[in-house]
Length: 356
Image 1 (cartoon, rainbow, N blue to C red):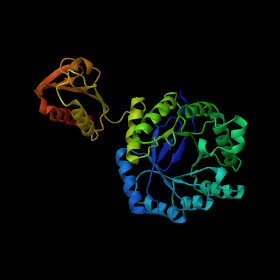
Image 2: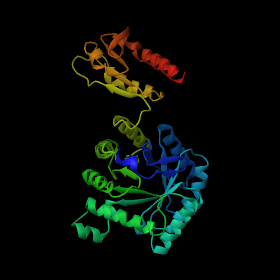
Image 3: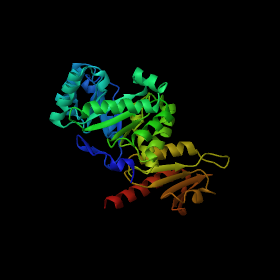
Image 4: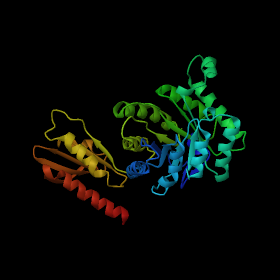
């Protein structure tokens, strides 16, 4: 049993998180929410890549009212992201948001917080209570001698109690930091203090290259400990990249079984083919298959079969010749330029059997 097996089960639209449910992937649009056409276009692209839940900012009434129009054209739950203005939260709820994300500390008076909670309670919509290290209260910074994991947790649980005291507990907690190890420690501590589902991410992690590495380290440690019910890989780039990274991360940890895993050897002096180009073409090819298998791409026909023995299917090539490998055994030799075609034929056959 892991922490995530024992968290509360929360419904978001047509999906569930917590209580041992599958770890879901989230992202956030970077379009102007009120630009319905652009926002829908981006969400559909994210859906295609495998996004489970999408978050949209609602800084204005126009943006909040656009939620209803957007919802009619997408197929995944939508979270309205609210800061400062409680009226935007209520408008987003009234226009069909499946969940809202707020920090009760910046919404305003207790009356305003209650108005938001009442709107969600009426529709049984979950509230994500979000706290970032960058917005930690001054008194907690002074109490703990700086921004710390303990301070982040205290802040988050204080906000949760505000909503609980209003008689509502349909909640998800999010605690984030750009400091990877602080974020890890915070999640290790809070997982022992609450049974609410946790949304996990390394905030402001950086560009695609740097952010992917930081998120993989931080989320990998957290998820491996059985903590986390939803994740976001926050990248300064195309949001679709976030989904691609998240899927690979979850599959690498054994938390996702869908999709083909591609393994490929590093190039070396024995490589006589364009292994980099071939591996990239294979990765592109397998995106269209829902098979739960491992495919190996090897650049050396000497060691290829042995190195590919843990894969379901492998290809290797060199000096004009290629081979198809299954479970470490060579089953066919082909011309090097036919490797991709032969691999596709094998995948098509496996897919036919899988559906059959």
